[in-house]
Image (cartoon, rainbow, N blue to C red):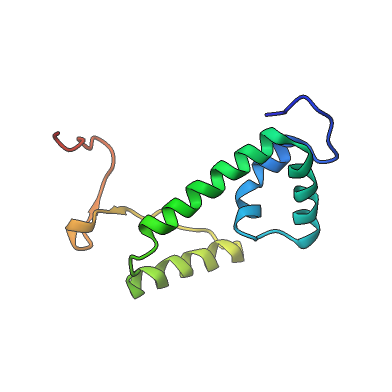
Length: 113
């Protein structure tokens, strides 16, 4: 996406890294560069505002759920494995009602309405 205007930082770069900016997961220099872009680019500022609103809504509606300790440990272990560059083995998808029994997504039927 581009607003058609010339900016020091291209709109597509800003939008590609929007969640890093929203989550404060980018270097301070990049944050400043993005802030300058938002100050001069209305379409990107609008997209930023929309994504920020969605993020706040999700946090408000879903942020109260406690995460089971074992799930948190598994997710953090997986993140550490990915960050270390080790090969990550494929793991089956688990359905919450199956008490740990693997299920396959192939051929799954959607729930009846």
